[in-house]
Amino acid sequence: MALDAQSFEILMHSVQRFVRERLVPAEDLVEERDEVPADIVEDMKDLGLFGLSIPENYGGIGLSMAQECAVAHTLGQTALAFRSVVGTNIGIGSQGILMDGTEAQKETWLPLIASGELIVSFALTEPDAGSDAASLKTRAVSAGDDYLLSGSKRYITNAPRAGAFTLMARTGGEGAGGISAFIVPAGLPGLSLGQPDKKMGQRGTKTCDVYLDEVRVPAANLIGGKPGLGFKTAMKVLDRGRLHMSALACGMAQRILDESVAYAKQRRQFGQRIGDFQLVQAMLADSQAELLAGWSMVRAVADAYDQKAPGARDGEVSMQASCAKLFTTEMVGRVADRGVQVHGGAGYINEYKVERFYRDVRLLRLYEGTTQVQQMVVGRHLMREG
Ligand code: COS
Picture 1 (tube, rainbow, N blue to C red):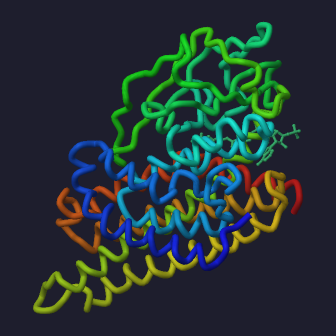
Picture 2 (picture 1 turned 30 degrees about the horizontal axis):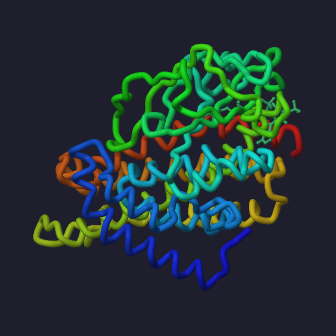
Picture 3 (picture 1 turned 60 degrees about the horizontal axis):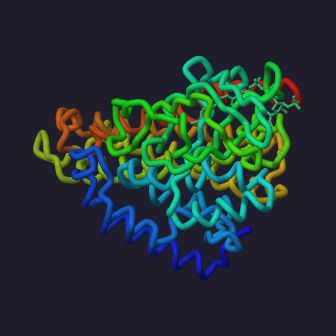
């Protein structure tokens, strides 16, 4: 699946212009109000951003992984809250349905997700099941034509905006094989939301807990129609999500580097531009080199991802996606740290963008699998296959 080269070029120009002319000027407003303005969300729908990764026959744009990474890289060059509005529809919320759903499930849900009419969240994490996702406790008990779901989910991105959740619950015994994935509409009786989380950064993004108290979900909403496959669905979705996240990290690293170079050209000390000092140039050069390494890696892994059969598991590609997330999210942390250093005292002041980006990028090393989880995936693969 891929958009033809000419249409993709047009799309990229539109997204680049949208970021430059609409999103960057609204960054301060989002930071102040902790909210992405509704008119910007409407413009995102018009641009087709919610349906980037959904095939055209289900109402989306049908980008390949490499193309999606190029768009994520562009969206990464502004406050990450904007990308977060569309992020779960493009990735972790929708992809389980696309990869493993029945034809009827795809036809029902994907067009709504692609248009942005429905926001869909991904609900895997629980209070006692984070990195150890296979230990999740939310139960789904079969009751005639329905399942009754009970439990709680934690830190669920876009839950306050969501119309539905791709939600993992236990239909069988312990471990990964007892987990199933469901499409759970947000309005069902027994489903409630916690207070919005107060976070270190990424103001304008919305996360909260989701509570389920005997929520009656039709068996028709069991993804793929067969129980016990939900953990594998979640892992496949995360492989893809981790690549998207890596592209986003590179986009943000580019923005921070651009901000740092602009400041180094304008700020004068000891009678000259600080960027003319080799010690400042060294910081900029290290960031540029690491960014180039990271972005080259993301592009190579995205190409490898596109080579494999859609929805299939390829252990080598999963391992490479983890390498990309591990490297790029740590890389953007170092780039942000140097960005603050190049700005000196100004880097600690809220009116300069690097102060907030420094906080914003901290999350990238945590969600969709911590750096240590990525190390586990890579390390285990090497011990198994190496
Ligand atoms: N694609 C498809 N299937 C996969 C897979 C993948 N990428 N990774 C693992 N599986 C399969 C395995 O093949 C295994 O199936 P079999 O029993 O048939 O062999 C099953 O899933 C269980 O795999 P494994 O034993 O490796 O699971 P673990 O419990 O050891 O967990 C980690 C592995 C730690 C990698 C996983 O729990 C994880 O990624 N945790 C982090 C979760 C996360 O990212 N959370 C963020 C929340 S979303 S913002």
